[in-house]
Amino acid sequence: MTSYEIRLNVFEGPLDLLLYLIRKNEIDIYDIPMAVITEQYFQYLETMGALNLDVASDYLVMASTLLHIKSRMLLPVQESAEDGEGEEDPRMELTRQLLEYEAFRKAALAMEQRPILDRDVFARTGPPPEDNGKGRETVLEVTVFQLVEAFRNILAKWEGEDGLELNRDSLSVADRIREIVNRLEEVESLTFDELLENLRDRAQVICTFLALLALVKMRVVKAFQMEAYQTIRVCLAPGHEGSPIHS
Image (cartoon, helix red, strand yellow):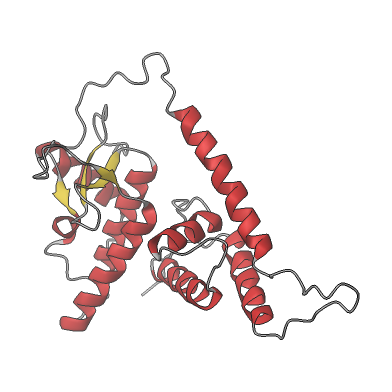
C-alpha cells in the first residue's frame, strides 16, 4: 500500500496560528506562557502531519524559535553590573512580531472590506438566518484553526470508541470536493459532523476534511457558528455556482 502526501496551502502562517492559540487561551500577549503555547503549537504540527499536509519551513522555524525562547525562560536572569537592569524578556521579540503582524493584518482586512464595483453583488444568499433567541442574528465565521481543532476532537472520539480502518484505495480530494458542493447545493447548510457521517475509513475522513479545507480556502464554502462554541456548520459562499473542480 503506497503512502500519499497532499500539498495544500490552507494555513496562512505560523504567526496566525500563534495568535489563534493566544486568543483561544485568553492569554496576555505581553505575558505568553511559553510551555503552554509551545505544547499546543506542536500539537497542531502533529495534526498537520497526520493529515499529510506539507508543513512549510516557516512553521518549523517558528517551532525552533519557541523551543529556544522556552529554554531561555528556564535560565536565571542575569543583571547588568552597571545599571542593575536584567536582560530583556526573551518573549518580547516574539510579542513585537505578533503585534506588528496583527496590525498589518487588520489593515489588510479593512481594505478588503471596502466596497468594490460588482464585488458585493451576489446571486445567492449566505448562511440561513436563524434566531438566536435574543432578538437578533449572530453568525460567526469559523477559522481554519477551529476546523482543525474540531477535526482533532472528532478523530480522537472515533478512535477512542471503535477505531477507524485505514484504507487508502480510491482516495481523491477532488471527488470529495465535488460531493460536498453537490450536497450543499441541495441543502442550505450542513453540520461538520454531517459531512463526516457514515465514514469509518480513516483515509476517507482525512480526505473529506482536506476537501473542506480546500473549499474554505477557495472561498467556495463558508464555515460558521450561530454562537461562539456552538456546532460548526458549512454552507456555500455567496455568489457560488457549481463545483470549482470540473470532470
